[in-house]
Length: 253
Image: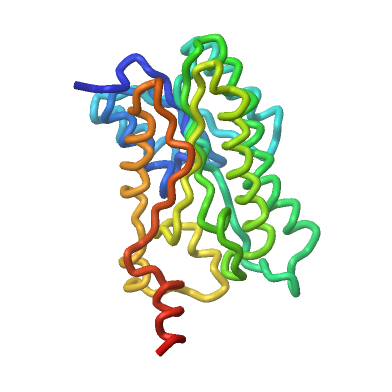
């Protein structure tokens, strides 16, 4: 039985990677989808997959770094569905010149707006729907960089994702009394297009060892289907072949 039948899910960063995987998994459970990202064509492709399987998907492209664009998507959700049950707050980005030696003010602005401000904007749009319903779940894609500081992801991305983790916990503190649950997902290395921004290219073998988008999509589906009296505050998902662990073991040897 479709566990999310009658529910509406807004998925950001839905055109590829984790967002696409999450959208497809939620559609399998019967949720009606609103798909948002910056590029129309990938969103249309995901929507076509959902519809081909008998699901409902609406495409709402937007630059989530722009507050007014986020509000406009919220307005569409209100007019089209009149409710919002699930927010998959997944949009994010990284840049190649990420080390302090090459980081610019423009790069800082892109990283903070693309990973933190955009996430906050989406939450402010989602919460009024959920408060009115006394029910709703928000699932945020952060990163292990939001918990572990290392030079790999860069200072700006790391700081922004730490902010996303903190944001999610504060939602539970304030909104749990309204029946609203917030979960922050912290993936380690995931084989998604964001890896193409790495300063050092990764091999196909490296990517195959990583967590795959479908793995995180399955996790998001699990969180979305939990009963209303349960909140999974935070979850880490990592590859078994964890390169930081492997490097630590090699250093000991």
